[in-house]
Image (cartoon, rainbow, N blue to C red):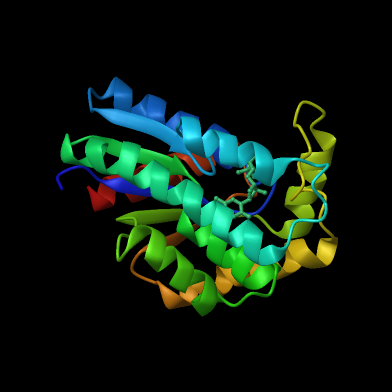
Length: 207
Ligand code: TYD
């Protein structure tokens, strides 16, 4: 496959989505073929699964159901959108991917990184991003930003306890150790311009 698959990860309030937009604008302006997408979602079926996953009313959802739904949404996203775009030589910028499941469901929910990886292997095989940008914002800083920004819609996972957010952040730190060649951490506790400059430099080194 000739395109590059680049994913962005981070805790709540890390500013990831604005960052992905900046990076997209930069590479588009350079004349590259770039596509922006997100998880859970990205396409029709996965956006419907997203609605279930993020619905604040569905407080009874079992952690394994949650993990399986994220993996199901990912499978459809991969086969319908990501693989064809990569084959066409497009660079893909994806807001969250498998590492979100490993951190949120594996560590946050306590299902185990290896267990969550196993169901994801059923969904997406050995496929992994070429590069993952981890926007490193401590959970207390991220949550403060999230609740200060009144435009953001607070979803089912945002409403989890502080402990949950602390655990999933530790989960990301564990993933950084497991995948040192693939996942790169950038300091997200700075103005967006600076974070974007670092992310673009990191991606350019990997192209
Ligand atoms: P979203 O509004 O896209 O949040 P953010 O701006 O933080 O990316 O909501 C996605 C939520 O789903 C977010 O809380 C992270 C969570 N999530 C998982 O728990 N597991 C996953 O595999 C993915 C992709 C997301």
